[in-house]
Image (cartoon, rainbow, N blue to C red; front, side, top):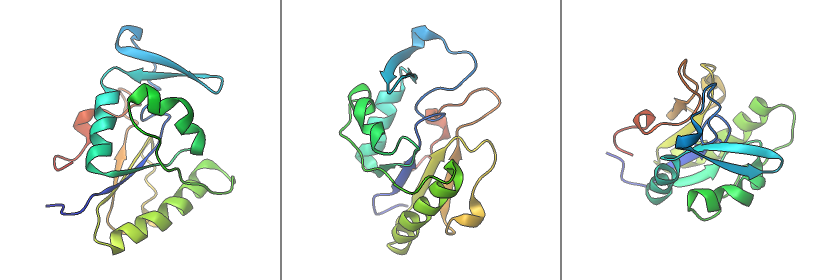
Amino acid sequence: MVTQRPLILLDVDGVINDLGLTVDTDTHTLVPSHGFVLRIPDYMPALIRHLVTVADVVWCTTWEDRANDDLPAALGIDPLPALHAPRISAWPWKSAAARLIAAEAIADGRAVIWIEDFYGDLPTRSMPEGVTFIDTATPESCVLTPDMLPDWL
């Protein structure tokens, strides 16, 4: 049983922004942001609102602070803190930035969940033991669905 608020590291593309090959526009809201059109499933705002009520959620995305420009309004949440790191490539900086915040949370006895489109390449060796990885890239889709979350969340 989790007694402290967990920490959730949350990506945008392939997690909130549905990167699935077939997207039914009748079940998605299209959100323009920074020259892109995000395809947000209709269930996503309620799911993300739930996560921010039960956990401390941090953007872990190459969008960094830009994730707060259009997404919070589309999701019905307040802006979230964002991880920052120098751009070498997406994975090394994400893992380095995520490792620091995850290690601190784990040392405080908190659960840590990283929700990302990992495509099966989980960064287990670069992260502290105890991080739960949720890989949203499946053969069927590339977006977070409610059934991917742990029951206790």
